[in-house]
Length: 285
Picture (cartoon, rainbow, N blue to C red):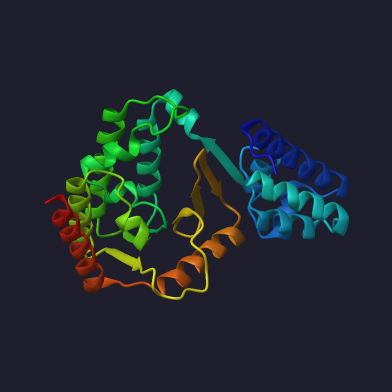
């Protein structure tokens, strides 16, 4: 399924036009349709003009209210699912400045109450010490886009202030590999693990560690973050995918709960992180 920006825009435009056309063909006014769908007339208008992106559930309700034949409904629901997927490449962020991505993340975090981070490969930026952030934000292969590393690192450090906002809850679930993978010097790795152990003691932060020796009925395939129950972002080598379909969100919430149920948490997680930090320091010596 292509998810390039041009395809996204076309899918959203086609969806709005199709819904508007079906409503007009039915002879219903926007107000009558809104009543049948238990939506506001303003929302119906915004969906039909493309100013608001409907969820898949919104589209299902509209199609049911319009008594649309199954074959047509299936096609439009497929279009709605595609329209609810966003993709942005790291090249795009690099062109405008990678620090803009940090600002975007800060805005997402500021508008969310509960954030669940699933981290099978690397700790997330909210948990980084500066030295570790420098390494993870620096280009690694020749095809990586150039970026202003210092500015992006500072923006990442600035984001971390939100961890002190006790009105928000943060759940960070990492595999043992994510903790131990030596992405930086041994000194930076030790500092990184010690820092995460300290962050785990904040009253609104929970860190879980998945040990390799534990049998788990699932495979940790992707980094993902769930913001409340409204958005999932999935990180790839080339960029990031955003999902808004409630069923996709529920799927990722269920996956998070599955993996969390097998994790070491609380004081045990902090003790493990401190033990790994000590191991890095012994290796340095």
